[in-house]
Length: 542
Image 1: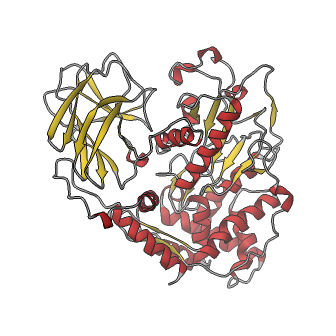
Image 2: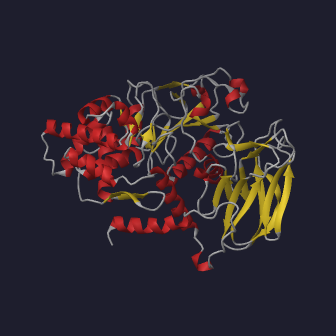
Image 3: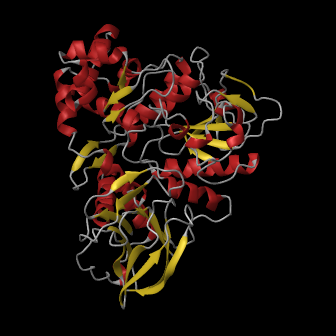
């Protein structure tokens, strides 16, 4: 069987595990026979496929073919560039580094490429930023222009390498080599594919035996990073000394708003005036260290304000965040719908190492989103960064807990959930909330009234079992003093009333009960004392 067909076959099997189950009020399905119970590996595969499918919600092959055919560009080259840049997701980029324009679309076009590509394709710049076909046509038109200028043999896929790199803003020859060989032509050789959420093929890229006609990266760039042995040392000149006596007490999580190679390439450019300590690539297979942890990288353009971070470390108010933090950039975009499991895992291992070496507290107030600390101008890493599993993985790698082995966490953001065993939904009107102290990526709240209209946390058990249920909420004076959690057990419904004005931002045990095999649910009802709100954040099943 062909390599790509094998990939699709495995993904299709995993996709079956992510199919939508019954609505919250429907009867739970019977448990599958033991031989059909999804293994942990199968569940991981199912989540990976579901995450990828969120990134490619429509079939795109025909659009790639149309744009490539119109401008006489190899369709596989166009697909490979799009995969290297955005993993075939239509992104709405944001500025991460001053002086580097935001990227847009399937090809992550930015700045002058949008202007020139739009003119060549006969479309508006707005269309290039917002419409998939216009974005692909603009990129293909530019590639065709560059190919004509270079006089290449268009039938020779390897000869397109110097043309492809011109679609980026990478200026350094060695970084260009990394991008061409490790990103664009690597995926041309390996092949890739993606499904839509309903299981149709979104994009198929068959593997090809092709070598880029482009200089190889310099081997001396492969020295290990001075602080993290699993990283590659790409030193940046953009740093200075930390103030004397300053302890490192925080990790800041960023997204590059672009591809990995273009990201670290920008950050090592002396003219860029920005940097970070580390950059993690999209698949988690490579990490670059750019600045020593003992030095001050230039990654946050704001002074610290503890009111943005749960009133933690208020003694640092008014101090540059760069003074006391380590910055980790991640290949990708704040707008993307999910993050690859490999990238999250590699980043968690790196964060564990940093916290151990610097004595940083491992919680969501000391491992913080860039957008939380600089909200006026930054949103990264975006609403779909899986904070709950990320912090838990860091703790687990550091040996100080995290989610207990075998436990299931159901977050209020399904992007953080393993679709094979956890899902969340609401009935009626619920509102997104982001007050500090939440679990995962936020929470939902709703006004109390004489109607159930619940938030529904569901979890799957492959066999009947006795489990303890914990709940997490953000406390506040307007919270319900008797918020009703309705737990459906093997013996029927049990209601547990909790005071959400207290004990916030931690796990609170609701009780221990027996549950049947299959999908089970815990509902947070709104039917309690009027004049308050109830908080649906997360539950833990252990």
